[in-house]
Image (cartoon, helix red, strand yellow):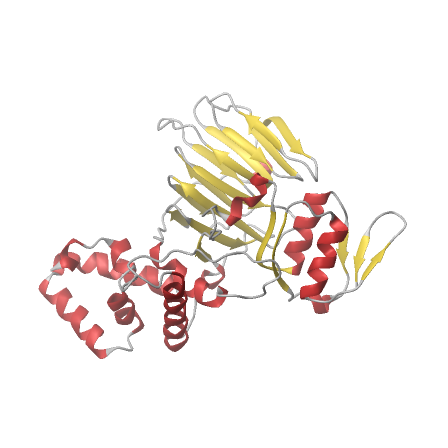
Length: 359
C-alpha cells in the first residue's frame, strides 16, 4: 500500500487525508481509522500531520475549505488543460497590472498543503541586544550589495538597514535586518547563519531566501527560493517553523515580546510566479521591477515610499482595504499613482514640502 511509505509532507499533500482531517467524509474517516489500526507504527506520523493540517487551516470551516480547494484545482486545470491529474500544487498565476483579488482566496486556502510545520524550543535573542560591529544602509530609491567575509552576498532593497554582528564568522554568523533583502548564504554547517528581525529570526546553513521586515509594515515575510530555513518567533512562545523551497511565511508584526502570535494569523503560501519566465514575484525588486500582488493599500504605499524615495501619507481610512496587483518597471511615481487610481479611485494632494497626501 502506497501510504505505508508516506512521510508527513506526503500525507499533507493527499486529498483523502485532508477529508479525514476535516471529518466530513465518512469513507475517508473510515479508511484512515482502519489504516491506523492495521499500521500502528504510522499512528504518530498521522497524528502529527493531522495536527499540522488543523493548525494551518487557520479556522476555515470544512465547507469553505473544500470549496476553495476545488476552485483552486479548477484554476490549475485551466492553466494545465492537458493534465488529467494534479499531483502537486504550483502557483503560476500571472501578475497583470491592476487586477484585484484574483485566485487569491483559493490560493491561500490550498497553498499550505505542501509545507511542513515544526514547533520546538529555540533560545531567541532580543533585537535590541544585538552587538553591532558594522552597519550598511540602502537609501530609499536605491539598492546596495553587501559581501560578507564568509562569502555570503546580500542585496538590500531601498530603505533597508543591515547590521553585522561584532563576532561574525567566529562561532556563528549573525546579522540583523530592518527592511528587505535577498540573501545568498555560503554553506557552513559548523557556523549557522542567523538573520534577526523584530518579529522573527531566520536560521540557515546554506540557502537563498528573501526577507521583508520593514518597521512600518504590519507583517513580516520570509520567502524561500532554495535550501532550508528555520524561522523562530520572537513572542516567547518557543515556536519555530521550517520552510521548504518555493514557500513563503507571513507573520504579523508584534509590538511587544509578551504578545503572542495567534495561530490563525500565521500564513504559509506558495510563492507566486510569472507565467512568461517563471520568475518569482516576491523577488521582482531584484530585477528592478516594483510588483504588488494583491497587497493592501498601506503596504503598497510603504513600497512606493521605499522604491521612489518619496513620502506618501494615507489619511483616508476608507482606503485601508483597497488591494492592488500591478507591476511597474519604468514608470515614475506620478505614472504609478495614476495607474493605481484607475483600479481603485482615490484623491491626491501634494504639499509644499513634497509630501503626497492620499485623502
